[in-house]
Amino acid sequence: MFLIKLLAYAAYAVTNSTLKLWLSSDFGYDDKQALGLVLAWSISMTVFTLLVGSLTDAIGLRKTFFLGVWFCLIGRAVMVFSSIKWLAVTGGLLPLALGEALGTPVLVAAVRRYSNTQQRSISFSLAYALMNVGAIMAAFIFDYVRRGLGEYGHLDVLGVQISTYRTLFFVSLIIEFSLLPLVYFLRKGAEFTDEGLKIVSEPARYSGQDLWNSLRLTVRDGANETVRLFGELVKQPGFYRLLAFLLLIAFLKLIFMQMYYVFPTFGIRELGNGAPVGRLWGINGILVIILVPIVGAFTQKVSAYRVVILGGIISAASVFVMALPTKWFQGIADGFFGHWVAHIYLGVSGSVHPYYVMIAIFVVLLSVGEAFYSPRVYEYAAAIAPKGQEASYGALSYMPFLLAKILIGTFSGMLLQKFCPETGPRNSGMLWLAVAITASIAPIGILVFRRYIRVHEAGRSE
Image (cartoon, rainbow, N blue to C red; front, side, top):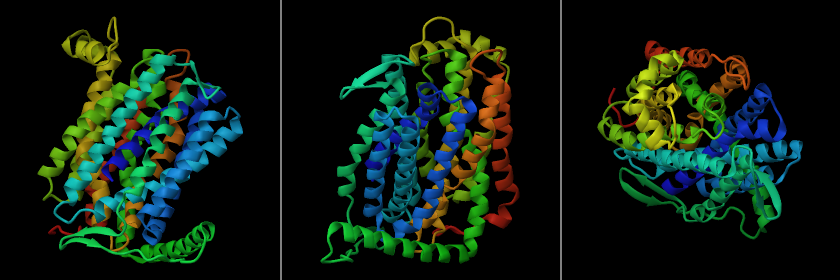
């Protein structure tokens, strides 16, 4: 399951960093249009994720994830090999959104089912750390392909000439394909409890039916069971308190949406074509891998809610670094730290732009905050979930991305065009100031309203 998490996130992260650039470069969309399409894709993926959580509880982890991988393979293949705008955008992004959504609650539920109460915190922390190994892989792939082919180069694949950004999708397609044998080896009916390992047999529901009839009946019954489980979900009082908590977390997730969809364009415009923006963001993955297991081990006895508050404060504060004047950091850029970041780590030659050190400092602080709060958000949702509804609650833990994506689509395209245009004068600090102020809503709200939205966590004392 850990290996699946690593590879699935690597494929997803390569796609995330490339989407906006692909839409603008290959199809001519401007900033607002491209981010609007990314918004539509992201929202559909999040909505699908919220809906398929109950489906996973109904038909099982393996079946749901198999469906997800196949949908992702179809979507990525269309995005790689189709140069027809409507086909690439519709036939590629929609299946990919559904496929990613089908895999998301499986991974959250699997961590919960394959660990007992004592292991739960460190298990979620390790899963989150390995997800960041995938992010680092994606960051280096992103820069390596762009450096090798050029920002707007081409590659011949099976007689088809594909652009640099479609080549990145091709790499993610290969990674996605490698998931199929791993999903096959997920053990049927396995669950690890405080009493030990349990294997619950999964009897065949439709014996005597052929493949297509079995699939049709599974989808039909799974949909009915999904409706039933979701109906029970909304009747639980803890559901609405979790909902309020997750809506506040969305303002922190806005930072990550900014890094996925806006930061690559910002970095290329401020630092030039071929700028190693992937490895700059890769600092986050490197630090999180180191910090998350350590933080998880030392905070196992602390409630997830308390740890989220601390991490949220650090994360929101980090963004204000990017809103400061660049001239304040020129001395650091000309010193040892700037030399180490730009010349040694990134391999950039010549004078060091202050943004290199500003981004590095911002990402370091953000990573510290993330190591505290982000894995515990998923744990919190799983810890308060009723028995048998782990995937449903796990799916809800991804809901903050929905509001964060709406916020990104609502004003980030406008801010990018206004303060960091492709040509003309720029004032990128204002773009980041807007993000910093918006992100600060999360820790303030979680702290102020904790009496009303906090839910008791299984295995924790009050």
